Each structure stands twice: as C-alpha cells, then as structure tokens.
Length: 258
Image (cartoon, rainbow, N blue to C red; front, side):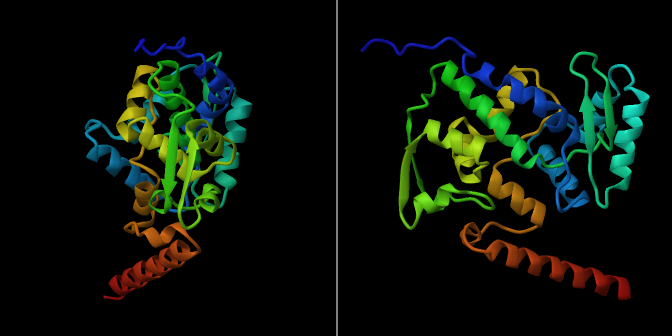
C-alpha cells in the first residue's frame, strides 16, 4: 500500500490567519468576562495548577505580557479604561497593536474563561493536523447523545434520540460558523484534547493561553456543579444552576448571621 501523501503543511492554517489577528488581542489579553467573575478566575488558575503548568500564577504571567512593549496612545488608553470602569460588572478589555506592540487595557492582567474564543485554537490545531496528513476533513465521525455538551449545540437536532454520522469538515463548519459546542468538543477530542491543543499553541509560540479540559468540565467548574447528562437537553442545567446559587447564598447568609 503506498504511503499516505502528506499535504503541504499550513495550507489550511493560513486561511485562519485573518481570524487569528482579530481574535488574538482579545483571546490572549482580554479574556472577556464570564457570569461567575472572580470564581471563574479562580477556576482557571486551579485547572492550570492541576495540570502541572508551573508554580507561577497565570495572572502574574498575563500582567508581564501586558507590560511588555511601548506605551499605548494616551487617548485610546483613557477610553479603554473608561469603558471598563463604567461597565456594571467584571470585565477585561484589551487592544493590541500588532505592528507596534503596545497594549491598551483594562484589567488585562486577569484571566477569564475564553468561552467560544477557544474554538479558534481547536480549529487551528485540527487544520495543522490536516496539513500534516494525520487527519482528513473527510474522516467520518459518529455522534450520539452521550456526546452532547451544553448551551448552544445545533447538532443536537441531527442526533435526535439516536446518532448522527458526518465528517470532520461538517463539524468544523458547525463549530466555526454556528459556534456549536458539541461539534467543537468532538474536534477537541480528535486532536488529543487539552494536551493536544496546548502542544500546538506551544509549537506556534502562542503564549498566555491555557486550554480547559473540555466544555462539560469547564462549565461545571465555573458553576460549581458536577456534570449530569440531563444538562444537555432542555432547561435542566439552568434550573439546577439557579438552585445551586440559591443554596450557596443561603449558606453564606447563615455564616454571616453566626
């Protein structure tokens, strides 16, 4: 059997460079807010520490990166600071000049869960593997109800009560054009999960990004809950999350009254 032809590397990867240039300032330095604020930040650092990513705080690492380079234009820096200060919540904002290297930021030293920005890293890792000939966009994939995740997942209708067989290209399209969490999670597993994507980022010298262990574990860690397959359908997750928040609030109130 003749050896499998290896396509020219990075042929597909270059297609994502414009999107990368748009996402990097926010994905690397902004890490826009999550609903859980400080709890989410602690979750990210805990996950990173558990994976043996070193003893240095990710916040310290992020702060060092923001401080690198020349100062940002004063007018823009003032505007960014005002936008962040006036926002009724916890948010990180950052704008980086790709050409000059300056960063105008508000709370950019903090790390937030990337949420759907992380789909970019999964797609880039996948296309790099396609360029290497390790994965084909035509490779078949079968999804079942056990593969369902949470929040936005249009592929759930295709799976229905049984299964759905498609290919890598279809899942990539769903993940990148419809932000399908289940499609992205399937691609995430295909490229080796957390370690596979993190290795690709290291190879490309993309610093300051830490990959979570998957959609289910990340969202459960943020909410302080344990995964249950019932959360993949209907409004079960939202009801249970609200109940958990109320339980935590009552426990906190009791501690204050002691």
